Length: 241
Image 1 (cartoon, rainbow, N blue to C red):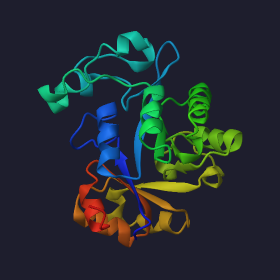
Image 2 (tube, rainbow, N blue to C red):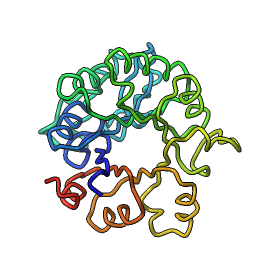
Image 3 (cartoon, rainbow, N blue to C red):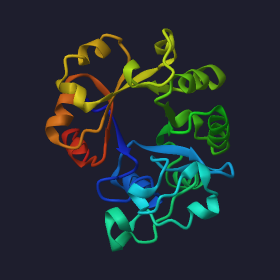
Image 4 (cartoon, rainbow, N blue to C red):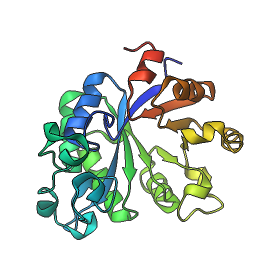
């Protein structure tokens, strides 16, 4: 159980603005093994970190990542709307800013890299940057698109984690063979379909386990990695707090 990897979801999302530098740094300071983040491409071809295509949920402004330049995106405040005045002025980070942070704090740190832009160009630029920072081999690559998972595996032999077939875009009969690991939502812990995916024999990433009951259920079902918005309950159970 002690070898289970603790991954912060979008950093330390329960307390800090998701997918921000302050959230990532807080997760690292807490002592997690990894954090997950989401990559999209700006209009001018810069990989930036944002879960949603439209920034309204986090910024209060309807700005589409893929239709906006980096300069335009950097004007948005992604802290105050959801996290209050304390985090006013929090900005969308670039992938390079995240990698520079990780490299400076802990070059052995692990990364869950989720591609939200389903195009090979985004993958190519991002992986080139990960290699430049000597972090490529620290990564799992996640995507809800089977074509992108296959591309990462064939082109780069990256360590991939896909999701159940019914959650995936462009899933093909052979798509599972390009998975190194599988990601399962913790809501499946109480579902009869859980057994279908356990039988595939792939290492399992459960997401997101934010309370002791969910953590224990994920551990009982053989989790190799657990993602959490609040990693504290998981770390306490693992004896790491």
